[in-house]
Length: 239
Image (cartoon, rainbow, N blue to C red; front, side, top):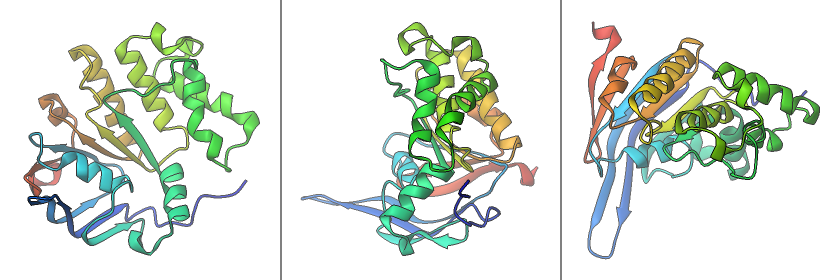
């Protein structure tokens, strides 16, 4: 089996003077303004802020979807700007897991089939092992008995747990979650945050963008964005 890229698993993410600027016909919008941040494995980060504060841009940058206008993004000890698109694609596939507010499940695929999707492009996972891994992941989020159900047959909370299982399909080091509980009731919101907290305790770096005040109960570090500027609201190490 081919191993994952030889990356330093201790460094995770470091942003240095990270700036993202969007130029329109009438103005220059600074979405991220000279941010200096680090994200480590085994930690749960909550990024909060009003609409337009830059949260979605930051998640897009961290997910290697959007490039910085200025500054540096160091991932696992490697500078992202030095990597080819193929290398970035491989890192996204193997080391990053994404969870969104809208679950983005394929309606014509059963739950376990949706979980298998990221594995299709992963050369490290043999075809004969994909279904077994998908079922194990569904079991880990309490949905093994719903494996053969289509998304329309699942509740919102169940669909989001399928999405989390899918995000874990390639055993990523980092989970990026953009408003993962925005469409859920309080009970399911708690269930999702508890699962993400558990994953951080298992050693994954969890980065959650959320408007929910509930996330503060689970986060190790709370960061607040305001017009592209970041401040640390709380840190478990400060207590």
